[in-house]
Amino acid sequence: MRELIFSIIDRSDRHLVLSRIYDVWMFIVIMVSILPLMTINTYPIFFYTEYITAIIFIVDYLLRWGTADLKLKEGWKSFLVYPFTLMAIIDLLSILSSLHVISSSFKIFRLSRLLKIVRLLKIFRYTNKITIFMGVIKKEKNVLLSVLVLASFYIFLTALIMFNAEPHINPNTGAVTFNSFFDALYWATVTLTTVGYGDLCPVTELGRFISMLSAIFGVAIIALPSGVITASYMDELRKIRERKEEAIKNM
Image (tube, rainbow, N blue to C red; front, side, top):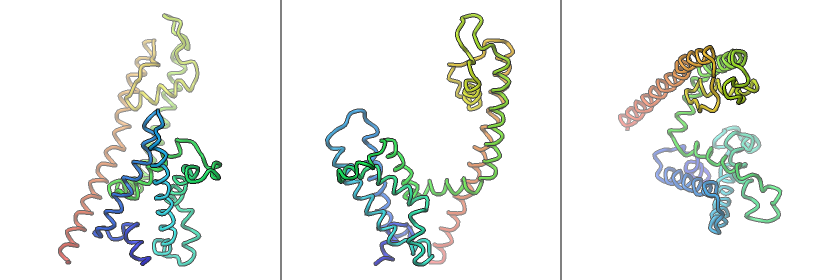
């Protein structure tokens, strides 16, 4: 019985119909649970949806904890280790934000509404495409980390140059421009990402020239991780397709 429960809730057998139904069901429950975060007003129905989804999350957590030895394969130690795994912590945080609905004695756990956003991370478990993407990130973590370091250094360098090249008060309007180094970091970041909100902009010829160079090099730096992730993701999809074809041939 425990083996069947594990195969359903943990997608150990992706061809099992019950497992796929459970994934869709939990996906719907997660989306329903975050509906209150999408509205300003509070409606009575939200109390009931919060109550029901909280119970479902608790049952799901207990079932996964009860089959932890089948997942971690460390015998009785699995039941001690499982609560400290990443997804188990996410599950627990998702539950804690709703315990006050089940009983008023849990008011201590009435945490910020924003904590419920953690529930979206639970989708990683039920969506194969996100799992593949996270695997790609893990596989290319060294390359992506190098790009992150490069981008961070470039932002800091550009901000430092701009902060010393631009006047802190616009000589034409008297308005404050780069009043602090944080303002320069903010400007460098939005320029690197080619967003450019326009709330902070250079007013001198030198500053505008630096801004032009920053935007040009920013495009090149931002394009690096996009190419790496796309190539690795396509390669992972190709491997999955080949494994499926191989499995069909062996049937």
